[in-house]
Amino acid sequence: MPVITFIHSDNRSERIDASAGDSVMQVATTHGVDQIVAECGGNAMCATCHVYVDGGWIARLVPMSEEEDELLHGVAAERLINSRLSCQIRITPELDGLVVRLPDRQI
Amino acid sequence: MSATGFTSQAGIGHAAAGASAGVPQSDIDPFSIEFFEDPHPAHEVLREAGPVVRFDKWNVYGVARYAEVHAVLNDPLTFCSSRGVGLSDFAKEKAWRPQSIILEADPPEHTRTRAVLSRVLSPTVMKQLRGSFVAAAESRVDELLAKGSFDAIVDLAEAYPLSVFPDALGLKPEGRENLLPYASLVFNSFGPPNQLRQDAIERSAPHQAYVAEQCQRENLAPGGFGACIHARADAGDITAAEAPLLVRSLLSAGLDTTVNGIGAAVYCLARFPEQWARLRSDPTLARNAFEEAVRFESPVQTFFRTTTKDVEISGVPIGEGEKILMFLAAANRDPRRWDRPDEYDVTRKTSGHVGYGSGVHMCVGQLVARLEGEAVLSALAKRVGTIEISGPVTRRFNNTLRGLESLPVSIKPA
Image (cartoon, rainbow over all chains, first blue to last red; front, side):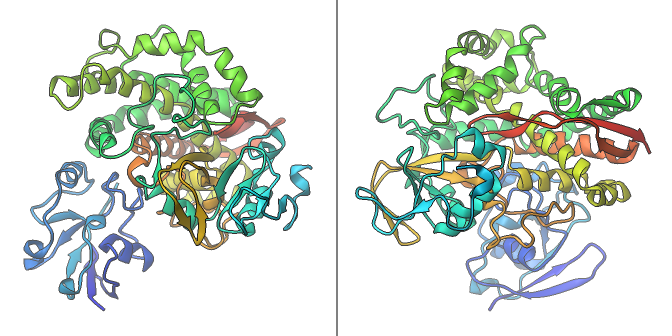
C-alpha cells in the first residue's frame, strides 16, 4: 500500500496507508486528518482541501487542470508554487512515500 | 395510511407485473402532505426495503440509501438530467418553462455552461463578498436582539438572504417580492402533477414575467453575478441568448434554498440546546453547524434522473427511459454511511453528504449558501445567549423543499 505522510502546520506528522485509486483528500478525511475540510466532498468546487506538496513530488504528479488552477486562487491560506487541491491527486503505487504539508487554515 | 404509522414492513409490498422482478413495491406517496409532515420514518422504510424501490402511484423507481444515491448522482451519462430533474420526462412532455441549460443538461453541453457559473460563484469571489455578508448578518442579529421575540423564518431565514443575495446578483429593488414565489414554483414543479404543482403553475405567470425581465442585461447592476454572467457572453464562453438563462438559474435556485438552509439551522439550534451551547463556546464551528443542518434537514429533499440505457443499480435491472427518484434526505441519514444519523452534531465530519447533490451537477451556489449560513450562525453564536421556541412551529409544504412556514422564537443577549 502506498504510504502518504501528512505534516500539520504545527509540524506534527501522520503516516497513513493509502489505497491506490483514492484521492489524497479521501485518505485524509477517512483517517481523521482534520486540517482537510473538503466541504464539497471531492467535486473540485470549494478549495478547502488545499495542501502543499513536499520536495520533488510536485513534478511527479499529474499536472493540474485549468479548473483546479482557478480554484487555487481562492484558497484561504497563501497559495504557493507547490499548492494543490488534494481531491485532485489520485493515488497510484508510484506515489508511495508522498509527503504533503497542510496549511494553517482552509476557510 | 398515516405517516406516523409506518413500521419496518408497512408501505412495502411485492413486485407487480411490469416492474423488475424482486423490486420492492411501495404504496407510499413521497409527494403527499402526510409524507412531508414527517418523512423520516418513511425514509427508513424505503432505505430498508432494498437498494431500489418502485412507487406504485407515480410509476417510478427510487433510491434512498447513500451508496445508490451517490452512484446515480455520479454517473450523469447513464442517469441524465436533460430529460428533466423532476417527474416530468421532457422526452415525452413539454417542459413548463424553457429548459434550463445547466440544471437540465448533460455533459458535454453542461460542462460549458457549468464552467461559467462556477467561475462567477468561485472561492475567489466569495472572499470578496465575505465582509459585506458578515456585516449584514451582524446587523440583522442586532436588530433581532432589540426585538427579542420574532419569527425566525420571516425575520431571519428569509430576511437575511433577501438582504444580501439579490444585491449580489445585481437585481433592481422593484419586484423582488416575486423571488420567493418563483423559487417555490420551480421546486414544486419537479414533483408529480399534484395539487402543489398545479396550483404553483397556475399562479406562475406574473412571477415568470418578472424573472424573464430581470435576466436581461440592462436590468442587472454592474459587478453583480448577473452582469458577470453576461460578460462571459462577451468573452465567447456562452452565447448572448444563453446568458439570461444562466441568470435565471441563480434566480431559481439561489434564494429559497438558503432560506430553508438557514431556517433548518436555526430550528436545529433552538431544539438542541447542548449543540447551541457547543457552538456558543466555539463560534468557529458556525460553518460546520450550518453544514450539519444541511445534512440533517436536507432542505432539498429529492431530485430525479432518467436512465439513458438499460442499466443495473446494485443488481436491480432497470430499463431505458425510466425515472429514478433520489432521496437525498434519506441518504443523508443512512446508518450505512453515518454514525448516529438522527443526531444533529455541530462537530460532525459532514464531508460527503449529498444535501447539495454530488458530481457534475452538485449545487453550483454551495459556496454562497455556506457563506450566508456561516455568517448568520457566527453572528448568533457571538451575540445571542439563549434561543427558545416561543410559539407554534408550522411547516411549509413543497414538492422538493423542506422547511418551515413559521418558527416563533425569543432570544436573549449573551
